[in-house]
Length: 256
Image 1 (cartoon, one colour):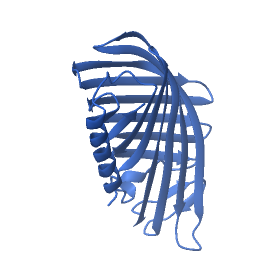
Image 2 (cartoon, rainbow, N blue to C red; image 1 turned 30 degrees about the vertical axis):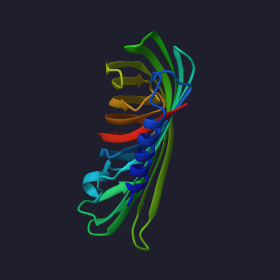
Image 3 (cartoon, one colour; image 1 turned 90 degrees about the horizontal axis):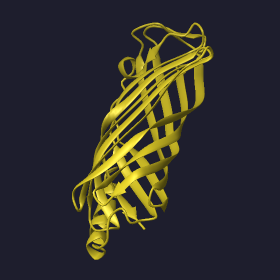
Image 4 (tube, rainbow, N blue to C red; image 1 turned 135 degrees about the vertical axis):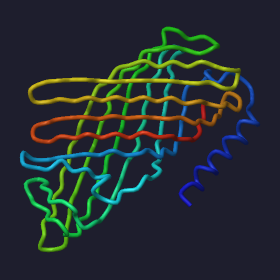
């Protein structure tokens, strides 16, 4: 059922592409994309000086899910782009604990049914400059700010405690992007942005790799299939996180 809106969306793209099958795919001012991403999660978080590193995937019955990602590109000039994307991750699982854990200074004992809820919204906005841009593709430099909003909560039956943790983590990254057209209507794009920062009060490592192919149906529409891997490691005050999302996605784009 969750796939039906995206299947219909892709169908509309294909029909629109046949009706407007003229012009070059790179000749646009606005590009909007909708993707379905099914990553394999790796999530380990601790909060508080005495907290246990909590492996949300292996400790709780968290399953792989599909998430909706929205992308937008504004192109004010041939070599300049402003890019935006957002994807919300949300996981939940309940299980009797097989080990004693501490979270936010509270203890959750072995055997107690405990529920973990995790929300992570990954949003980015950035600027791309393409010093090389031809009919065969382009190569550019990309700088952005990735805004991470994370919320984790552990709860158990009363009178056991319920503890929550929230962290907003804006991270600037820089990297490169390149696209090549294999044929007139099919392209392959790869991009990579990263940051590694070590300070006394803030340590962070952020890697974002995205490789995807696009089949264009004229200038205005296209279908995409790709693979993305996001890595976030941070230590802020007494909180630490080790998060990874990697896996395939598919969707479509419209251009104006």
